[in-house]
Image 1 (cartoon, helix red, strand yellow):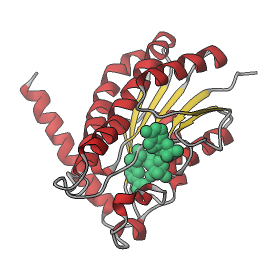
Image 2 (tube, rainbow, N blue to C red; image 1 turned 30 degrees about the horizontal axis):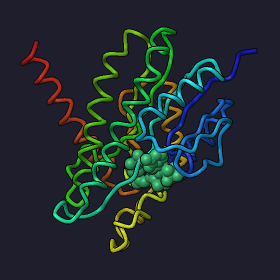
Image 3 (cartoon, protein in one colour; image 1 turned 180 degrees about the horizontal axis):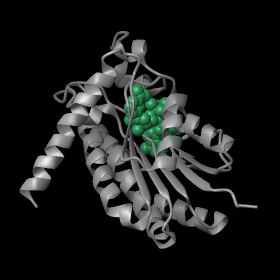
Image 4 (spheres, rainbow, N blue to C red; image 1 turned 180 degrees about the vertical axis):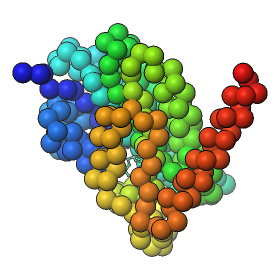
Length: 249
Ligand SMILES: NC(=O)c1ccc[n+]([C@@H]2O[C@H](COP(=O)([O-])OP(=O)(O)OC[C@H]3O[C@@H](n4cnc5c(N)ncnc54)[C@H](OP(=O)(O)O)[C@@H]3O)[C@@H](O)[C@H]2O)c1
């Protein structure tokens, strides 16, 4: 019998991470769940803050000792701060950048050498549509996601020859606890609540990413123009890639 695949999911206590942990368990994965509050779903549970680099490496080493390998890493933990850059707290923004951008780097650094050695593995980063929309009131959030998007795209290219799959998932609004952060308290019912999709839709996209290794997977909202808007941004981005690659050829 084939031994179960091992998947590590960060931010697994709620929302997209919890739905992903549940989906992967359903598919027979041994799931390692990480978040600051205790995750309910998972075979190995870690209560940890992903911004703690030493702790992230310690967890990954312990998982490898206990389970022998890591097949899938889903970098999902995150939160957003809403507000004008004039008014938001720099300390909180630094913490957000560490959560959204540096933590995925720590986890990937920790799992990648083994995946390359085995010529097998999948890394899935939960990015966001915000990566392609420089969003006022979510400035540092969208900039952090843009950094993660660039990182993901470049790593995808580097890892191809090692058969390690790298994908970014780009959801629009999703029905999770995301807007329960205190900074959203004065935001009225918005496009967010109205057109948001269920987190299970993003979990299905994660499974698609693991199977296909597609560089970018979009999970559009119920807003009718959303898919067109995304296709347009993608077309623009691909055009930029093409032009830049010609210039630096
Ligand atoms: N909801 C959306 O509309 C949307 C759209 C696009 C992208 N995303 C992205 O999707 C990801 C998941 O967000 P969500 O919407 O599912 O929100 P959520 O329901 O609030 O879940 C966020 C998860 O991340 C964990 N987390 C946050 N900071 C952490 C830290 N420093 N260390 C460890 N765990 C941490 C939270 O657990 P604890 O609080 O217990 O630590 C929770 O499990 C985020 O990266 C977000 O940017 C969300």
